[in-house]
Image (cartoon, rainbow, N blue to C red):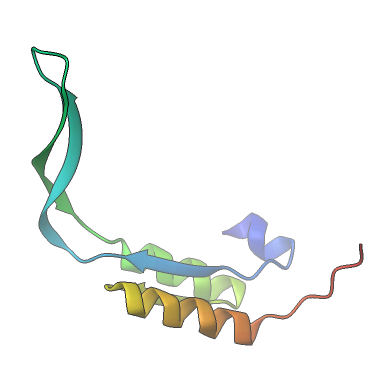
Length: 88
């Protein structure tokens, strides 16, 4: 966080998903050599406190995306906030 701030880099952090137990797809090869997808339980926790701190300290913004539409809206918002000219 300090390095980003010292270099004037704004951090727009995005927490993806939601807290709680979910199923994580894992691909396994069975005894016959066939690849199959199985689901394993997985506990997910978004560290919103850290993501928010990174954004606030650097002058950026923290977002929480818990759906595909929310993530698209977040990217549109960030695109509207930040415009940088690049010379080629």
